[in-house]
Length: 381
Image (tube, rainbow, N blue to C red; front, side, top):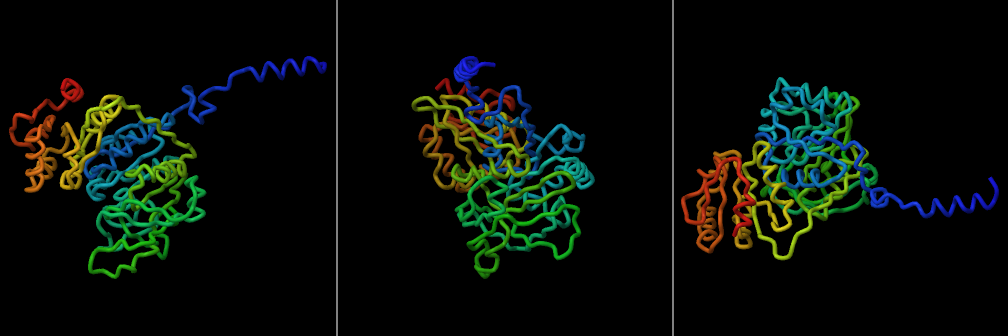
């Protein structure tokens, strides 16, 4: 090839447009997405479930699959790349799967599957009765504190695994496990802490310095699989989403880049109750509402109700979920008072299926079927 041909070829190549996906660091449409299962059975509840579902569902690199205990018992873990166990009640999550079927999770990991846990999801990786026994750590008894901001320090090794900067971070803590490593290996999995608590995480009346330095993030292996779990909730706050996304990166090598729906001017302000989540339906409802450009969606736990969040909402959605728990949360004396004020001030409650039994009759309460398009009622106002 002569000199003129080389120059001409170089000029032509410079004119070829670069793929917008490649330029933006996005996954091409043809690339295989990671199938990420989120446990939504008994024990998985609270805002964290929706935050995790949103991060996964809005990332072009991942496909969200909601998972019940029965799905695991039926062997459906084999169709997933990652299992995510969120916050809530660890023992309920364990029994939702069933003690006789935890071996299916072990097999999933041995073959190269990944596990990501937060709060209760970290309790479940530890060793002991009614635990999944994935990593050689044990929770201290009666060590956990209450909801609050705490400081954790991410080690240099941890930062490299997560793909973020090391150092101190302020994070949301809500009674996650405070663990110590077993002196001898009694668990098949192997692991170490990669972040540590730097402020007190004990209950009132305990030595506030006792558990400073305890593990805040655990990382390890189980067979060919990888396991990571946080005692705190990095999914709750946008400023800590890099930690949460880093957890997925540590166990899969895939960098997730969530792209959230744009909102129109002055969208309707809607809250969705998260305290009694069970089943595929609530997550489906949340994503359906969150994706609409005219709806500004907020996740609402009992604590948000009691802190006055309803004053900022036009609608409160109660999806069909755990009817008994919904009734319990909606009928505390203070909640009933706040809900009545919300309704009397023009707020509207939309209750679907068994959630309808959790709220009293009122002109602004709409009791709807379990499978309902809430958008129809929200956007008609």
